[in-house]
Image (cartoon, rainbow, N blue to C red):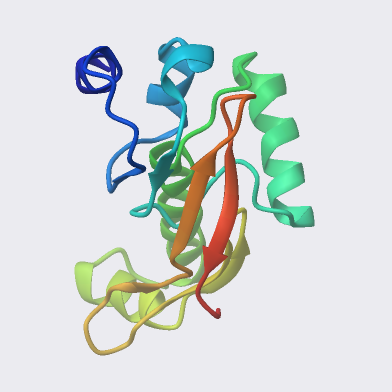
Length: 147
């Protein structure tokens, strides 16, 4: 937040694209003052993803935690727990190798969209997105990669 305050104090007007600014930071700052021309590009999830899976996730999150602020980190934690739980249910033995084998074929329609594990490098395939901060303190998705 200090960076955005200094940027504003010096009257700089060019757009900013931060790879680490999330909904939690946007909600913590004075939105009316500091949200001009702020973009974020790192996260595959913004609360404004328009999908039935995301709407269900938001409603469940609000009910459980009584908060409207949801960030990519929070949603990715959900994904990780979901994928691990699913792998644990499918495995016959609780070993690293058996869990890893189950994760190799893991995929699901998460709140951010369809994600899947890469069988070779064990990384997730997911969409990339760029969001622009709105006056409401949320990200409007202005670009996204193909799933």
